[in-house]
Length: 209
Image (tube, rainbow, N blue to C red):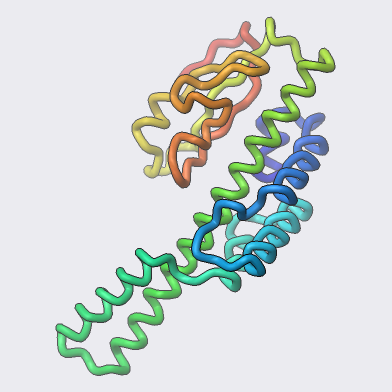
């Protein structure tokens, strides 16, 4: 969730605090769970994520920067090798096989970079959102008797899974309640690549899936 999405989900008055909390989280934990990279590349990815959060850079641009610090995962590399073997089985010349493999490899690398950028950004934004809401409750800025958090899916683009659709509209109590679907305060914990989030809702307002 970038700054624009944060302000839409929680209101403009929360935007600076949420962005600061997100940046703080990324500085501590950014890229910690990224696999198959060395420590120097992990540090570089972490700094890229922090910079993107500070400047409100899009996921796409962040992913383009991350590509420089990663390679293919072992599964991707095996898939690319099999793709090349299949091309050779079709009796294509070496040059054609290399060109096609180069294109496929670039697509795979972009997909991995995009997944990393999405996962890291969503993870940071939801932890930041949780911390800010807890602080707001403690300071009396949010009244748990009047407000809850509700699970929100992205606009239907044909890629929303059935589990997320089922969880859409579910609620968690503030400030330490969990969503039933994940057992945590974070919708993003549903699965790898999940784009769901949470937003504050007045109890007096009905929610429709």
